Length: 84
Image (cartoon, rainbow, N blue to C red):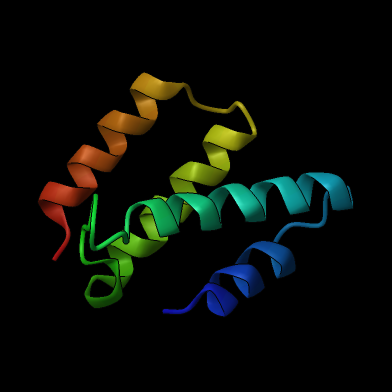
């Protein structure tokens, strides 16, 4: 999936204030990029679309302060281990 798909998902399914939509979209995309760095952390998100979605979904919740660092890490660790 490309960043265009994620942008479409986040901007079309949530109708909050534009500034919050921008913050959530940028946070989710930044997290996707950070977890797709072949020279650093690379979870193979291009080949694992469910995990790619989970990374962006959890990042959006983190950006909105709906979950904290510990909760985000726990969810993402579970997803990384469980999703193929």
